[in-house]
Image (cartoon, rainbow, N blue to C red):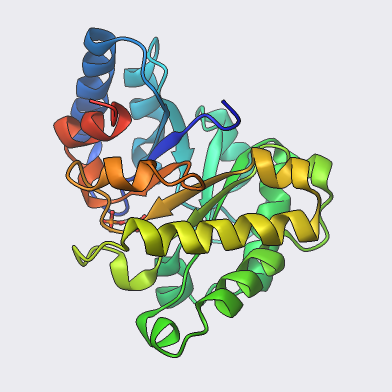
Length: 254
Ligand code: PGA
């Protein structure tokens, strides 16, 4: 298989520590019972729960990621965290440029690019999020938007540095709305992003980069999305907050 699927849970600003540990424990238990999964699994809890969720996942294949970082190596930046801090509590991945960060915290492509560089320098795998808002889709400029976000996010980076890159295509109109992109809509944009990666770098990088779909992924629609040749997994919000649902996504083949 060219690309092993990845099912990533973005817990956003949900779960206090005890709830987070309980969810992690249920995921570990479920995966132990079900055995080998057809996909890699990743969870991205809020910062205060990272350490304890990591502890609760010990001995399971589920990897740990954060939802953000700051691009400075350290300093007087109240409220921010560094890549090294995330590594020190067991993170291997970090979500960068989620649409909620772009929308509510004014992150632009330049900020995303700085964060991606910092993550890679530190040895974290960046999960770069791109996606159009409804108005952009209606105007027919989805491709321009995601192309700008992708090329802006990886600007100045060499193919070798991006060997483990994960891209998440998340149409903003599908996030938390219950309105999923159809498999055809997802495949179209994923294929476009892969062609763009080949153009920015080479076919080898394009072929090995996992492109996740995000936006109301749930047990009922995961199979159709995963059948698309360029959909390599999901970045999942709501359905990652319940162990049963998230396990169904990890074991999407039934
Ligand atoms: P959702 O969120 O699955 O709740 O739509 C996805 C995301 O924002 O990553």
